[in-house]
Image 1 (cartoon, rainbow, N blue to C red):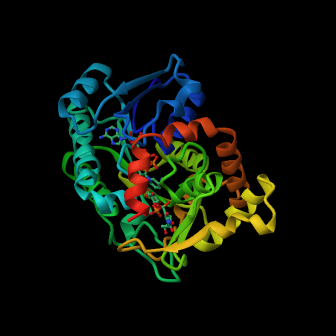
Image 2: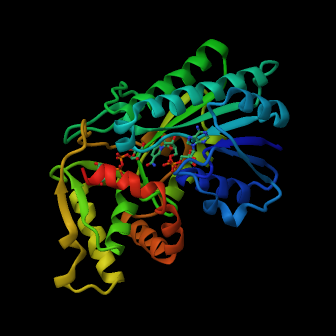
Length: 351
Ligand code: NAD
Ligand code: DAU
């Protein structure tokens, strides 16, 4: 069936992979990408699909009620895949209000517009909200987050995402708005902004800059290759149970310090660096992130069993592909680290 889908945040890291997948795989759907293009949004991420007939870019802010209402009235979207957000934990510590505005208010503006537009009939409509495993808080060395784990967010970022999840569910209960939420673990891959651990460290190695590991480096994350997440989003969007939640993860836990050592080893091989000049020598332990969650780990067995999803890319394979992409796209990297990035870097790492 012909669908008109609004994807928010499509010029960002995960959003651009989702847009690319949908416009290529579903020529009968029309994909509208709303993105205000913050520092993290970049139309270069979508160069290969920008001229597709089934794709339209709409520059706009999800917190702008008039703009959002206008585009809903004009294009009559049948579904929303909502990814637009402020997404970096360190920035949320520096500026929590910006996170409340975009992540909470922005989500509510989209929910309101969808509710109004779909008022006559909610049939075949869907508000699919992309969220994070960070809403569950932190784990100690054992256990996994399931869909039943109570929310217990610790950072302004995760608190804002948790709040947005609650609003989505509340609109489902109160106004019968059909929704799905998925909560995913740490993504990595091409087009990720170099403020997040993996691309930041690749960029720093390329520039012979120190690799700032927070605290003792014994924090654990569960890593998923971004196209596997896009694959899961596609499956959940089409086959997921309405008014339900799915956890998505890579079954792939790494302590930060072990991940960084592996990254250094692969980078050394690619850059022909001897042991003496190894990137490992750039590792520097720095002041810890305030409220740093010790461990995230997802139990993704529900999406596996109900929808048949499985990650397809191993970590070693994905990390190598990611490094190759950054090495082959130095121009992209140079563009995104010009301007605002330098000010951010100074503030975050040099004080
Ligand atoms: P990102 O920061 O790379 O991209 C966010 C995009 O949203 C950018 O294109 C930005 O311009 C846009 N945006 C921000 N504020 C906006 C506004 N007010 N109006 C319109 N557009 C706006 O983020 P990402 O890493 O791709 O994450 C996408 C979504 O997935 C987020 O909701 C995030 O919480 C969630 N998520 C991310 C990860 C991860 O590891 N990156 C894991 C789980 C869930
Ligand atoms: O778990 C999903 C979440 O993963 C997403 O919801 C977020 O949008 C995404 O940013 C990510 O959050 P993290 O805080 O886990 O990702 P980040 O890449 O910032 O950090 C990964 C780990 O590496 C974390 O333990 C902090 C550490 N770190 C990070 C940076 C940027 C460092 O040691 N040094 C650094 O300079």
